[in-house]
Image (cartoon, rainbow, N blue to C red; front, side):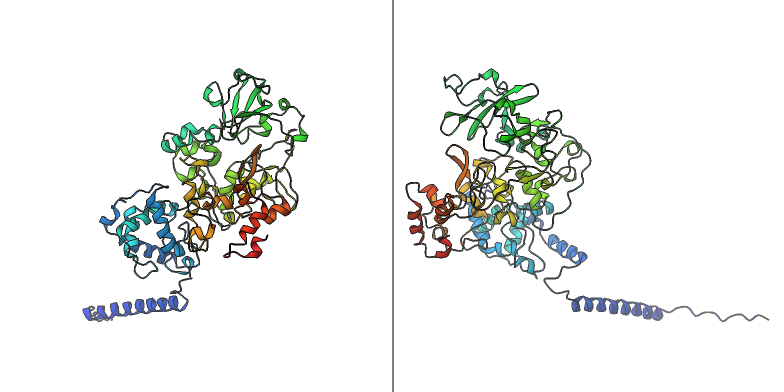
Length: 561
């Protein structure tokens, strides 16, 4: 006979509470154990990289803490690069901020890399990524961030806004860490710079006025391009305006090309813009000169010039996507970006490591030769086959130099002896190895300042260097560093560190880009022009050596070198 099982007693609220309490106890124990392990494993160490979740939560809390009224504040001061407010902000930044945030805002300093949370990124790219407003930057400077190394600075509102103005103008640099793989872009073709104007109208309008956009010009379209009077009767003038297919240059010298068939050839005369006089033009010292007949009309510009004076020169068809240094020379083919205007469809040197970023300019601003030469029976003087998604060193080698020899291209110490060697100089400099790029100082899109400098020459170097700043100079004031009166020619950074010693035409020189100070001893021993006598042309190197002995803040051993 089957027995009926006894009925199950229903769970009481007390039983439920026991299970809930047991569950919470287990969760609490696990949480406590995880927290203990986190702390014991170094979770509070500032040098330890935090888990992604922790970093995400911490950044989110910082962002959420900003009041709406702070976000919408507008900077009442000017952020113009050459303005007084930016200059004042620079001094405040170097005094209060640079030790942690770095001269470029990336935080890669001894102090910055040793604190957690790390200093907020202030570089242009980082501010743009987080869409930081001026009001937000002002809020953080004034109030700081609790439980971090960021203090609330007790500064007047004007000085705080001046800091914001300078932060908007921090130097642009590139990463010096291991190069990242070049991004893989969808197949694209060249569309020409005019196609960029619709979305980038301001940049396009500035670029159109630059030497980059006007390297070569057709006098039929630009009759104003020809600087001298061709009817002056000078015996070097063996051609007329109608013979000229292209005018090359306008700053230091101007040359004139004749079109024969599908190639261009230079006339044997050039205009010295500085001295306003005609001079012969015939290349005899470049490495390729002996490989071509001694006749300008057997030396085509297609092999020797046009690869740098155009976009996507085709050595087979001799066709170009565009004459002059257009947008796609530095950003790669733009058809995909035109179709889908996002960062992933275009190359940008500002997102590259320091080697690739600088190679954007070095491809043309250097003296060298292709690794493969001749190419299809011709010798080329530009990196055939290179474009921005590739490695320049796979196509181009810089001109070699033997230490102690003075040549057409180099002084005895390896410094550039001629123009178009900024890249040869720059890769030997301290600037290069610290992530400073060509576009840290120059804006190829065009500025109101000489050489397309980003700011006025007198203040450009001071964005990174100031009296007693971490980057030097290590002197109480700039005047004590330069030993010249403030605002005098001798107090300019470039006067000593970038003297005009690289020849472009006759006695017209351009600035060295090694940033090394050359003393009079090297002038005497190796015939390298020293910075002092470039200015003090009426003095001797012996006078300079004697004058430097009075600089008691400098090592006499260094001054004697």
